[in-house]
Length: 404
Image (cartoon, rainbow, N blue to C red):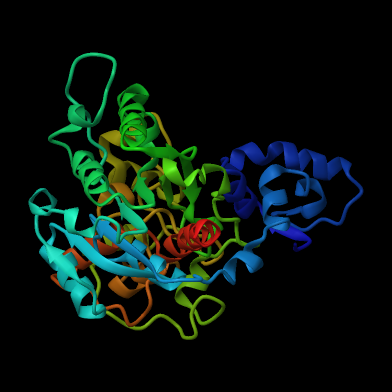
């Protein structure tokens, strides 16, 4: 581990605000340690859990994981292929990918010789794959369930896209289920939605590993994205205790890693098309410093840009936000120039381009997105970061290797 960590980096790793770093700064003042402006000495941090996890990580060992036999996977709600590429890199052979979005399916077909079904998942049958599938994965949307009574099971979820995920599992009986979703699923409908999902997974004959929110920036992804993962292992395999979520990488990737030649990519980011700001907006964002947001504007422009929101509470830190070379990107959205969630380039006063978006999601540079520019942004913004999928894929391969 390095001797000094930037204050913003410490805040990201610990998942706290920069204002909450006061304790560490005061400890630095009293400690007889080397100091560096806007940095915190690692001696102050080394006993904290997240830094311990990074220091003692088995990443290098886990990275060498290879399948000992041919493992097959099916993915529904596959989108533009972020998770699919990661699982492919880990060693899975995809036998079916499905999505309702035409452009996403064209993206998948354009880049890989995969079996892609462009159809409403409700029209698909998975019975012919029974006994052939090791993994079923899917990022089903977070939806409420409408029913009465306390015992919530498979039939109670009918009419939702989770029901289709559960139906696919029931029909093809894979060894492992992996569902991924937004962090908000934990608290959706006061936790009842997740409780129902867990009940259904158990009802279908799977042991559910404790659901976990994985922060992509710990897995070689230069972005502060979070995804909730649900892992179910078929009960007859008696392997729940064998599964282990991936260890973190030893450092956090930044915008510099994403867009410049270095550890993540062998070249600078390729040029590509991208959205543009209206001239009035561009002139205001020109005044925002690297890593800053609307509160860093002169008061006159704060009032002008924020309108009535200027007088409301809350930080609104995504508004008029310029990214920093030295930090991971904020979570990408489906549109890089919308007012609530600007993601302005660190140096140039413009939204991120399509290829810059793709790099932040760790897609390979040769992955070609199909459809209009707005569709391409949406496909990328909705994706599971490739390297996060790769890390989870290695954990799943390790488990299958143990039970095969």
